[in-house]
Length: 86
Image (cartoon, rainbow, N blue to C red; front, side, top):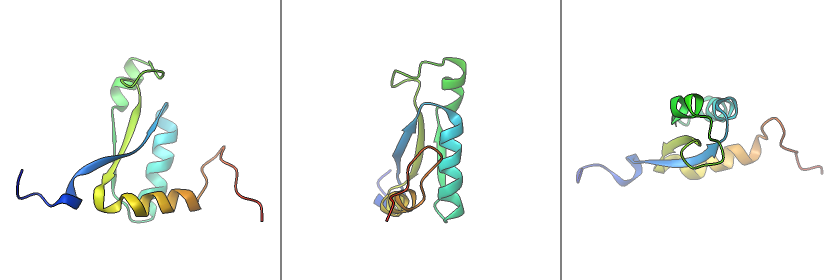
Protein backbone atom coordinates (compact mmCIF):
# COMPACT_ATOMS: atom_id res chain seq x y z
CA UNK A 1 0.00 0.00 0.00
CA UNK A 2 2.22 2.79 -1.20
CA UNK A 3 -0.18 5.59 -0.19
CA UNK A 4 -0.37 4.42 3.43
CA UNK A 5 1.40 6.78 5.81
CA UNK A 6 4.25 5.30 7.85
CA UNK A 7 2.60 6.20 11.17
CA UNK A 8 -0.60 4.40 10.20
CA UNK A 9 0.82 0.89 10.21
CA UNK A 10 0.19 -1.35 13.20
CA UNK A 11 3.12 -2.53 15.32
CA UNK A 12 3.34 -4.89 18.27
CA UNK A 13 3.30 -2.93 21.51
CA UNK A 14 3.63 -5.99 23.76
CA UNK A 15 2.74 -9.67 24.03
CA UNK A 16 0.87 -11.39 26.84
CA UNK A 17 0.39 -14.98 27.96
CA UNK A 18 -3.26 -14.46 28.92
CA UNK A 19 -6.10 -12.36 27.64
CA UNK A 20 -6.82 -10.73 31.03
CA UNK A 21 -3.45 -8.96 31.08
CA UNK A 22 -3.85 -7.94 27.44
CA UNK A 23 -7.30 -6.44 28.11
CA UNK A 24 -6.05 -4.56 31.18
CA UNK A 25 -3.26 -2.99 29.11
CA UNK A 26 -5.69 -2.26 26.27
CA UNK A 27 -8.05 -0.51 28.69
CA UNK A 28 -5.25 1.63 30.14
CA UNK A 29 -4.08 2.69 26.69
CA UNK A 30 -7.56 3.38 25.31
CA UNK A 31 -8.48 5.39 28.42
CA UNK A 32 -5.47 7.55 27.63
CA UNK A 33 -6.43 8.05 23.98
CA UNK A 34 -4.31 5.33 22.34
CA UNK A 35 -6.38 3.13 20.02
CA UNK A 36 -5.21 -0.48 20.06
CA UNK A 37 -6.15 -3.96 18.87
CA UNK A 38 -5.75 -7.34 20.50
CA UNK A 39 -4.57 -9.98 18.05
CA UNK A 40 -4.44 -13.77 18.43
CA UNK A 41 -6.82 -14.04 21.42
CA UNK A 42 -8.97 -16.76 19.86
CA UNK A 43 -6.01 -18.96 18.95
CA UNK A 44 -4.54 -18.64 22.43
CA UNK A 45 -7.82 -19.56 24.12
CA UNK A 46 -8.37 -22.62 21.90
CA UNK A 47 -4.73 -23.74 21.96
CA UNK A 48 -3.21 -22.58 25.25
CA UNK A 49 0.41 -22.88 24.18
CA UNK A 50 1.66 -19.85 26.06
CA UNK A 51 5.30 -20.84 25.86
CA UNK A 52 5.38 -20.57 22.10
CA UNK A 53 5.13 -17.53 19.84
CA UNK A 54 1.87 -18.92 18.41
CA UNK A 55 0.10 -18.68 21.75
CA UNK A 56 1.12 -15.14 22.60
CA UNK A 57 -1.60 -12.51 22.61
CA UNK A 58 -0.36 -9.41 20.82
CA UNK A 59 -1.42 -5.88 21.63
CA UNK A 60 -1.06 -3.72 18.53
CA UNK A 61 -0.90 0.07 18.32
CA UNK A 62 -0.30 2.50 15.50
CA UNK A 63 3.38 3.24 14.97
CA UNK A 64 2.72 6.94 15.60
CA UNK A 65 1.40 6.09 19.11
CA UNK A 66 4.09 3.59 20.12
CA UNK A 67 6.32 5.93 22.11
CA UNK A 68 3.38 7.54 23.90
CA UNK A 69 1.96 4.09 24.72
CA UNK A 70 5.25 3.07 26.34
CA UNK A 71 5.31 6.28 28.38
CA UNK A 72 1.74 5.67 29.58
CA UNK A 73 2.38 2.08 30.60
CA UNK A 74 5.60 2.99 32.40
CA UNK A 75 3.76 5.63 34.42
CA UNK A 76 0.78 3.41 35.33
CA UNK A 77 1.86 0.05 36.78
CA UNK A 78 -0.45 -2.87 36.11
CA UNK A 79 -1.50 -5.32 38.85
CA UNK A 80 1.55 -7.29 39.90
CA UNK A 81 3.99 -4.56 38.89
CA UNK A 82 5.76 -2.71 41.67
CA UNK A 83 5.70 1.06 41.80
CA UNK A 84 9.00 2.82 42.43
CA UNK A 85 9.17 3.89 46.02
CA UNK A 86 10.45 7.44 46.44
